[in-house]
Image 1 (spheres, rainbow, N blue to C red):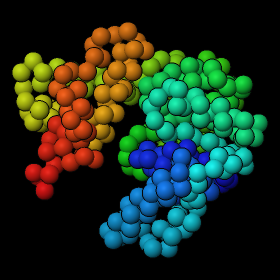
Image 2: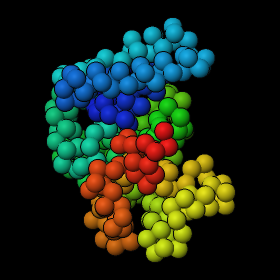
Image 3: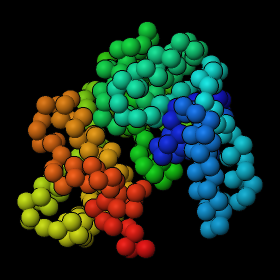
Length: 285
């Protein structure tokens, strides 16, 4: 299937690396330090072991998948990659600095993709000498379970790059949708944030409780999770940053975070990953 690099060994990067390795790609999982990269692979291994225990995966399949994952902290890993996918901090400057370093080292035919959730592709591509080979490949969490990848065309993304992106998404067993106008938030997050912002407003104005809003979404809209439960899974810190970014990029004040969300974030209560967010998971345990 060829060699590829995933930059960022956190929750999203590790998930992307896992599905790519599962599809047969040899994946270099890059992060700033060896420790971070190794931790990313260890988290993948732990998840695969749970699948083995449940009978959804054999030990041989797990070992073969892990053998195709190589943690690293040296960007020389991009030099032979057919694809380089970035999944680092949702910060334009951080992403641009990384892509400048990647472009200087990778092959001229390497596909460059960003997993940004909100940042316009064209703005990130401004630092590149060859923006025609750059596009958005937006995965969703948890990556192993979610079938969709948004393929986003920047102002200078070539048609060949878009087609290669679509083919890549198909090769890893995912479904794609094309985003032809490069606007903040693309399709899914524009829809999701509109619902989330309204749910926050309902709670903030005292119209209904967190629990009842979630119950209403599940039983009245047939959603598998309520907006607050989903926010706890994805991280309140991520939502807070993304709402502020959307407000900045669009100039739309409806994306201003409510005080309750800001208070949780300042208290370090990010959701499931910290044990407390809109719900207290430590009490539940």
